[in-house]
Image 1 (tube, rainbow, N blue to C red):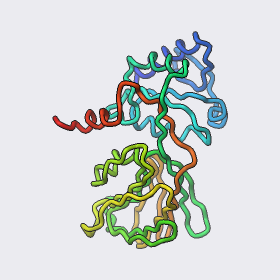
Image 2 (cartoon, helix red, strand yellow):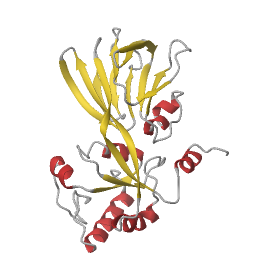
Image 3 (cartoon, rainbow, N blue to C red):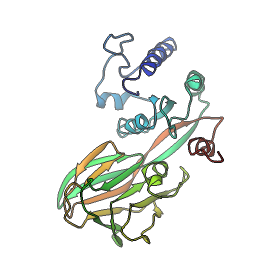
Image 4 (cartoon, helix red, strand yellow):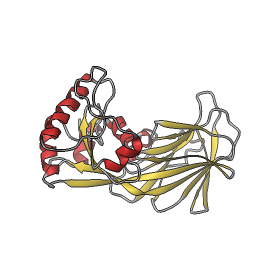
Length: 276
């Protein structure tokens, strides 16, 4: 749920009461400090084991953080838009209870979004792992010089990108940071990943669309202080020269409930203000 959002908290309490009257077991805790609608708190492991449906009240940032909560299960996710963009949280608040009625009746379509799994390695040492719904980014601090990133696919050398950074984006993430850096919009169901250099030193270094079955290796080649690896813009790791980032398609998908009255192009026209 979107933190520190009064209306979202009120909706969570109303939703909790609505579900309880229908005999739906609740997992998690939507209550504030005054405990206006207390629900038992559970740890991440228990949550991942029990949950079948997650209702997200917020914007796309809240939805992206939800992708880290699902563990190794494919859980159904309903996004209710309390944010400003809503590429992922496509349902309006007034549509929430109607959508839940349809879900409980089994009348819904699922939009399965590709996710990527990441390993950050320094020699033989594994420094960190993660999973992203949007993108993996290597970029430099404000005062750092241009960085050089060696890219290979399935052990085949692609290029040494000299730039302010590099974005590896899923189709879902193609409308996020990658788009602002000049990358293409990729339809969500495409089996593709986009490599987008950030402010490349050579203008001929353009975004590349590759199959999502490839294993991608990114290696930082030059000395540069303040280079950071970020996962979905929410988790960061400091990088050093010769650090390697391995990226593979996740066997799990992020399963969104799809609105019956809208499609992806409706979302693009609305959010990108096409034709206005």
